[in-house]
Image (cartoon, rainbow, N blue to C red):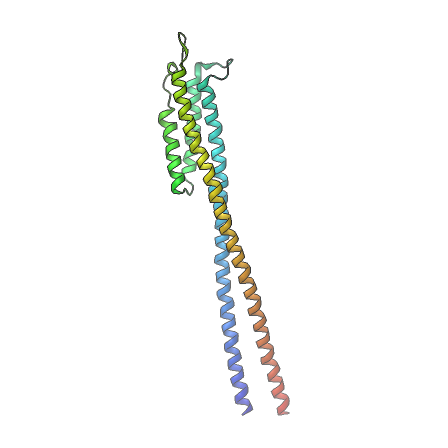
Length: 216
């Protein structure tokens, strides 16, 4: 009779232990998935937000140089090669835009970037220096103003793109915090399961020893 009771206890204990081990294994799989998600999130923050913010800064610097050349800000500068200088800055911008387009863009980003690219390729594609300056009339202020207005529109696109980096970066960081908090909860759950497992094994061994004493 006692052997039968002991066997039933063993079976129940083994079932409980099996369930606990299965839960621990499932928790471990979920934890691995969570860590992969956290890793991917921080990679996205770096590649698609921090690096992109660097792209925007570089583009802004090139755009500033274009505006200086268009506006003839430097009196001592040799403007005989100004068209080539502008083209060089524009090519640098387009090369950076190509890298920018390879990142994970939101719908808004794609829209602003497309508009910005069009301004650089079309509106600021100056073919002749005569559009900016002539020996007889000096600086063509009306045409320069048109180019300055286009540059202002381009800067607005850059500002909007920069704001998106901040907004999307905050979203990704919030997502990472949620995943980290979830991992902490799972870690506490794992500790609780381990405590239960130890208690079950202790009771199994303790009751077995008590039963053996009763039989002596």
